[in-house]
Length: 421
Image (tube, rainbow, N blue to C red):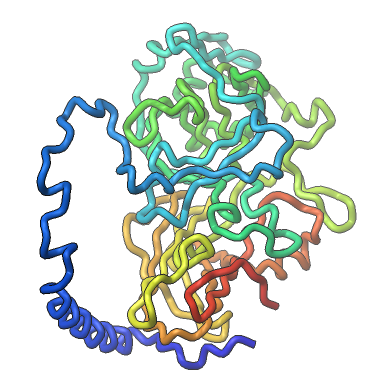
């Protein structure tokens, strides 16, 4: 058993310790200044002119941040054309994912689509079958919304126990951006959905011809046909020039390189007598159409890829939480494996079906830690433990694992993916 009895967690205790430590740090800093060449001597960048405004017409991160990038796990899939990479959650703060760091999931590689030749068709049970050019779509009223997109298989490797050592790999099949697009309901209204039209098939223009069925109720509610993310055009790997946004629902339904909607009277998966992205249960049956992503959270720092690098004293814990059912009004954290829980501080906007950033400041005394976070969403749902999920769902599933994640941090500040009962 890990001994965490020496850890101070009270807010008042942290403030006292922080002020004391801050004073010591400030005094030590002044004492070192006279002999620290990093501050007393001119550095190279202070003695020469830098590049001008034309050197990088499209801005790029500092070369000192070259390690902040998407990463793959080669053995997960047989071929990179139909594979996935992961968002570096441990390197980020706030709630917005930069476009170049949003995870990718492809079934036939990245389609190179010419927007001038791209078309979006609506057919099936409609009054008027329509074909839109990109120019046509730009004439419709547009909206801006911040949503998370999470792959249904995010954390899927953890069903049978701790597997991947880093939150980039356990939880990195997710990103959170601002989408700009046309409400899908406006396009469907233009076509005129017939009363029998209760389902919608969305189809992509990539080599895999990716398709997914969506209930008409959801399509008319909050879905977007998006062409921009975080203010700029969609990246090719994110579906340029057009993708479907299905807020709060699993990422496989967010069809990229969107080219067609067909209105029908039943789900196409049912017509084909197949079940895609189902959740296998212990008795051999499968949960079908489990679209919404339940409340989930993860501590991003400290974590295996982001160890504690200082010795004792004031320490900031941070992470993200989200729910496909609404907002996150509260996140609890524990640093002793669940013996004591503390309400974290949520900072930044609290938006529907979006990431929320949380923080917990504590005074670390150098003892080992067992870190967990537990999200509460606006419906009253509380994020379960992995064992609570397994009691109901068994070990045969891949999808929809929203169980509580545990990191063990040793006395050196190094973190590891573990499980506790």
